[in-house]
Length: 381
Image 1: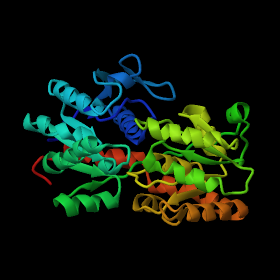
Image 2: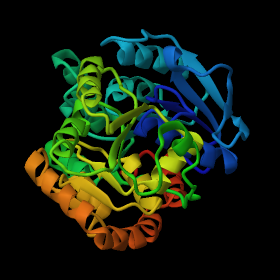
Image 3: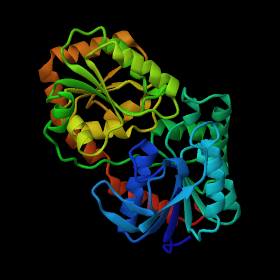
Image 4: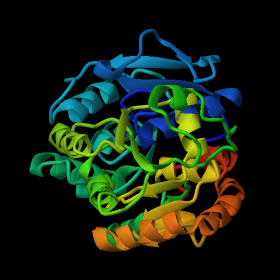
């Protein structure tokens, strides 16, 4: 493989452009930046999630003719959604004339061996150890673990987003991987206008949770801790569900019992920017993470962040945020209480968060390192 790489396929996302999850954000960011460098990309979106049309237009309204979005049939819901999409998408990609097929997440990697058999260069990005996530049943977990094993055995190169996962692949499979964490941009801060009109939210008047509402994100810990606090600050829960409807309903019931808990559902664009610009505190109480895009964004907006002490979170924030013991509601409550009482401490973290995170993680560096792997000769491991 040489610098002649021009045509790339992305397989694994639900849809792109989109902010529905970390995979979708990463695929969108990679695609836009590669298109600007003259590469041509086909994004294999799932039929039920697909936005209308084949053109790719980003949040700012710019259309990229170098990027096509393709609809791959699959079930809208259910255990077979991802596997059917992956099988059909991979078969379609065999005839696309691609120099590289880039698989995202463990599940889709289950078909990675097939294009490799046909001599196509295959790259895998492992966004996290998905089989550990609580929402998957036994069958789905086995499929995800199989995808992980296939990636370890057949992928030309594997990208991981955390050093913890890098060590896991080395220990479990003896496989070397490339640590290429996600990037983040310098955002434009916004005043609380739409969120004030819509929900009565003003600057520093709320604690923000921003993530998919699924068990492994630990939102239930945050609600339990919040309900023990004596505060006039609201708890704003921003995010949609992802095939975890039973958990979503449980959260809705708990939230409905407290008038100071606000659920916005999925947000993006200016409203998302306003929520991130005006929060008093951002909390990410995850049990499991790959590399949280929401955490990167929260810090880039200059938020004081409180995160669970899992390796993937601490690796990101270092000493520029506070942490609590994973799954420990009492410790979370005490840390929240301390930050609510100590505004000066919150402001100190806010002063340093944005510069720290935007210097540490950069999308241009991500593209540079990813393209090196696309072009690397197959016999160079």
